[in-house]
Length: 219
Image (cartoon, rainbow, N blue to C red; front, top):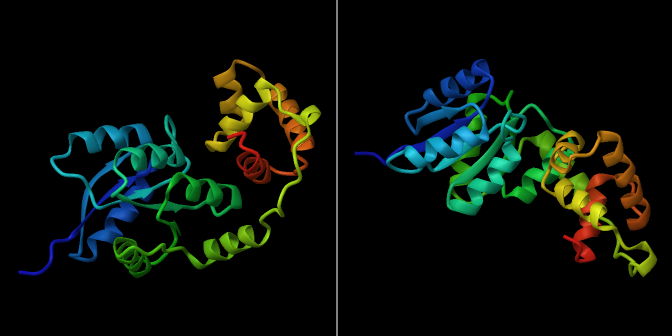
């Protein structure tokens, strides 16, 4: 009797792509799909009802109700032993950054061949951090551009309570429209506050603002 298969759950809101991932996993007896969720909230509900938890979740990023980054944070907080591979068409640096912060164990593009998907799951289950080559290059670029040590934040440059609220929400991976809805303000107001945050923290993008906020103890 051989080793038991790896149990894999899929979080993907597009049925065609979910079927593609299921089909790819079905090509090997090493993997057993425990279910498919259409969003992060549904994923957490499904896992709560399973008799045993999966070994790994293939997580999409852009999903309705609860996106993959928020779902990764919630799942890792509750079940840190479950491996999470982001399987997405989005390879932009902001998504990579927030996925890593959320606790993702690897980051793959959905157009990877089935064999590459199989190897990535095996690598993650062995404690590795698999990444598609294009993702790895961008992750390295992020590290190379890591900001230099920050100067002391002067009192007159301190963020207002509202700016701190917005920075905290941005650090969770929320988009401007989500921040606006959460704080009951307009998207234009969020953007104006973000401009003030950038100026005060002496940065030019969201990732650098979050890093600066953490280094200054604002987050």
